[in-house]
Length: 267
Image (cartoon, rainbow, N blue to C red; front, side, top):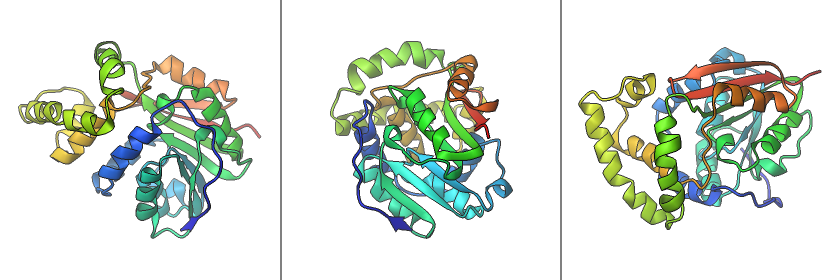
């Protein structure tokens, strides 16, 4: 794995420091993460990654770069801002010599026509300027290359978008991150119990019913910590992709609560 010196970055409005705390605490590479990755990238099977290069925008602990490399990708770039995230990513990706881990914002990604694939999983919806980030991702891929994102959907999440979001904005996202983490324990206990009692009818709830307690807590914490979290409808996600100049845009409904989208760079 190649590491490069820290490069100058534009400070974005977002929660990279708060997510850094999360990825510093939840850095174990769990086997279930592969199932999640495949759901978040439904347009590519394992064989589709073979021989390709990629850039992972907002890599966190590096788990979403790990799986393409195990499928035969030849190399790539994983970027994030917080040093705790990057430290976890370096550990996760240490077995993969072709990966460069770099401290860089999505807003400062300046690669041109370099990669076969640019993807961002669970990050674009936390940005103040998602269009700028997606434009940079599009510029980074070769003509004919693919840009993929996974983002929160508005459908089936209105109770979060309109009910819990005001509480997150007013309280949890403003508290010291350690306190927010401590406060994630009671709702996780309630969620764990509800799942054991059979609550939840969506595919997502069926999926997480098998998760261990620590994994559930990381999910609850992840929902509580960010300063920005957009929940987009299908039409909004498609429009976001098309504004980036992408062609052949396709969307897939993931776990009945989120959207995966892919588009092709003209050329």
